[in-house]
Image 1: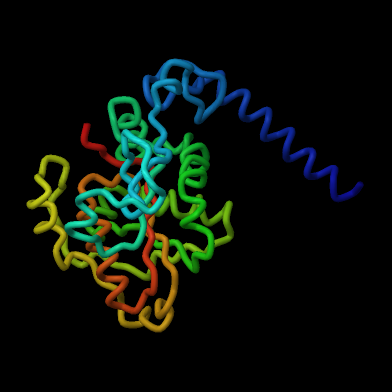
Image 2 (image 1 turned 90 degrees about the horizontal axis):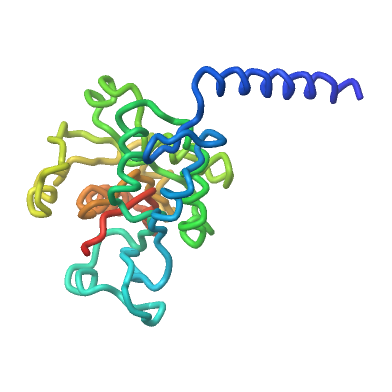
Length: 252
């Protein structure tokens, strides 16, 4: 009883603070900013429009197929040019509905939906997380990190670590070259932009050897960034590199 009373007091205080905060800053839908019942919730209209990625999909990169296929089917791109990573999955299609929540997380310090996003990634990436030795977020260059103050991929990775007990190890990978923003680049330009941009510190080689690594990112567009990261991790001795993202672009 003596231990439960302080916990009840803390929970009551947290509930009271949450009530006051909701009155001053009412929770909004992370996509359209309509008022909703709780932080991280989507409004009904946006939730219905969210495009979750489910089977059928490419067995390698996870891009969704429009027709039913065998579970081990790979897309033409993965067959012609296999990526450096072994498997990739994403929770959402990156489109007009999901883009605002990624932008809010990435550029506007809006983390209230983080637990919801982590839950979505956990659902999409459970097979990748099974048997994983560590979570490694895609790193930012120190100059960009200094300006932005946080790494959104690390926030997602630490969130996944809390619910899976898989260690988060951001020190395994570094961004050694300050690259240009890639939002308006073609696939070829992105590949050139991130070439040799990532490296594993020599002190991490022993830790990485023969390990199963889940590389965590917010958005996969062409796959150039996660592919470059996977090459660096494999070169350092990682046995299996799996990619888990909140969202990914899909060619319509």
